[in-house]
Length: 48
Ligand SMILES: [Zn+2]
Image (cartoon, rainbow, N blue to C red; front, side, top):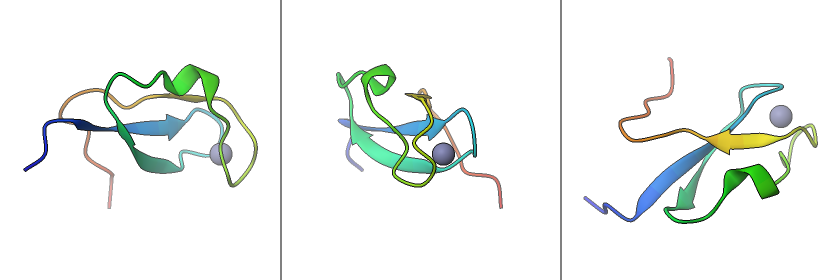
């Protein structure tokens, strides 16, 4: 387990990707649709 890994989630299409904690997802763009990303938060689990 790596506690330094969080996740960023696209608010537009729901695409999620791992990101180092401390990185602001708000400054990132979704690689899929170019939408804004937000931090997934601790305990984030992708819906199957
Ligand atoms: Zn997206």
